[in-house]
Length: 114
Image (cartoon, rainbow, N blue to C red):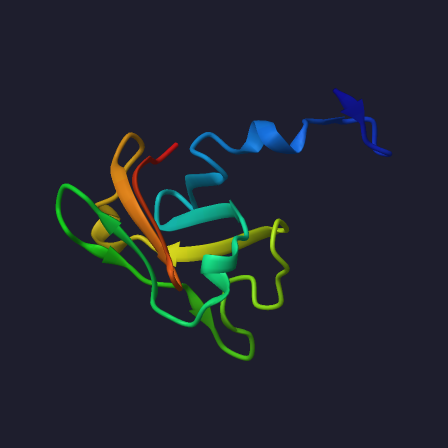
């Protein structure tokens, strides 16, 4: 582990990802879903962006704020780290849930929420 300038520990980039380049976590008391991913060419193609709970079928959409818009990486390059923040519908997605992530032409199923 490397140390940051502030004295904290910086973990290696690969430890962030648990499911082939995708990490999904709950934040904001479970109201927001934080997604981090390695950008692929498939993600660069235009298309829908959402998370679907595999058990309930509910869909989480991108979080949008005034003046900024949707909170997702916009100008990414392949193999860079991308992010997206999604609204958790009715707090239906919980830790341990299995979800499907769709970003453009990319689709990954059976991702466990941390």
